[in-house]
Length: 144
Image (cartoon, rainbow, N blue to C red; front, side):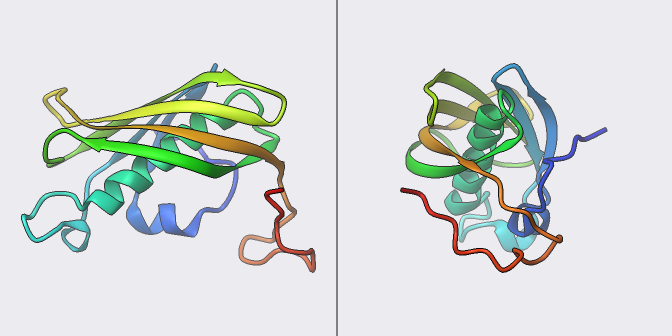
């Protein structure tokens, strides 16, 4: 049974990611690419893999303070081998300050092979009130 992200994330819903672990600075998401998420080699597109790791790292950061949101400041990705079939992404909060989170994530295929790895830096931000689709007449979110 998958968990709730706690916020509406339309792009994540579109891709079909599920949140399986969200606690103590760790996260795990599952994903099987739809045909439209494949590249010309018929493996999961690198952009979909990067999005999976971005969300996985953000979830790891938020798992320690889920009343806050996070925005991606920086992300570095290494692709090690094609990502095929059902994928599991595991994330970890490596270090945090009052306003920043330093994270990592790895995508594994169904045989447990590492396909891609990323590190990311996130900024904690106050979550804005939403009604599911729109932000209530507030100014755009500042990342300063």
